[in-house]
Length: 498
Image 1 (cartoon, rainbow, N blue to C red):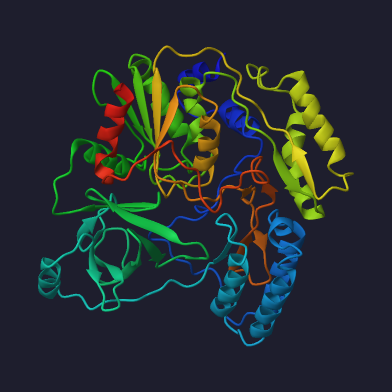
Image 2: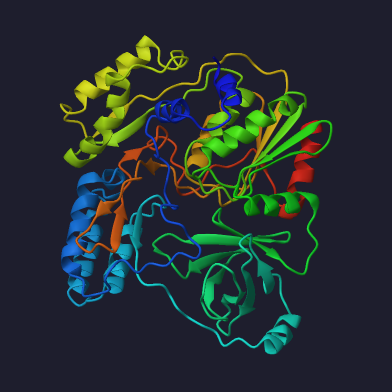
């Protein structure tokens, strides 16, 4: 059974499919980085907001990072070691006067951000920000008459209606007009947007996290990464916009397949988070259409990552065996404790029937070798194997595949970008990706004494990190698009046909 046949035959997600993804991906949930809790209409009341022993929490964070963070040996070197130690000591000194959990979070945030790694995260699960703006609809209507590109009335798929207004400090507030899924008062501030070049940085009312959450206006949409989608209420949507918005209503978060014309199929995947089965289902359902059209466009704009839904696309893009390359795990007792069970899956369990081609005896020997040597190695990093995607055949159609990225593409989306380089039929378009995939393997949190604080430490580095790191630049598409984003797909269609 080929991978595609397996996808096509699975009407619902199965145990075999879960096993397959875990095996094929080397480490399940490797790429999860932002979506460990729901974002909108999520309140946190479970953690006591009492005093926090900040020196202990900061000291334990530092110890965990210096022992386990894969980026530490690369980022703290002889050249900057003295600066690092001085910075660390300054924070430890300040920790003595940081009595609240929020204040301690901010100090640990400064420490984590020293490493300039968007996959490295500290999060504070604290009380919500309960800011309320006085709401008078008549005044609001007047205020929005002189609207700019962002201000106006919006709604989401949960029938929540907001007004985005500009504040005196040039930030924007998204205030509640009405909602059916919460009881917050009118004028409650769901999020605040701060201009950041042509885009925005978002502060959500229910989330304290060290990385910037980006947002942008595209056509009639306000997109908050791949987390939330808001649509202007005073605008008419085009056909694709309507399909995308409707997909959020039915729980697919923008996952849309459309046959644009007789030659072009279009697949929109704005997230890889918790939707592997949905992607597989959509792809399998439309397999005959994809195979009957010469061009396929895969639109990954806004896709901040998640898991491995892109596996479903491999049969359409492969023109040779696709090699995932190796990851390098930093050796420490804690990292081994987390890594060895992943490798044990390959060593101690039989391979599911139909997947033997992914797990040749040579590949299994590599896993057995790693499982034996990891506890014994004296190296700083150990290279662990990963599974390749053998080529069954090259599909006649699609003859060309366009994959579209933007500056919000991160994590597993960037990993997929790296694999696309091995295809002879793929062309990439758009803008550079986020840059957050040099270090990975941080799906499990590191608990701190203050239970409202969670530290997520990348414990491995990617195959390219030592030779061609991308965290500072992101991956760069072959064709950079500077035209308005709502014109991108039309441009790509024309370019594919040339």
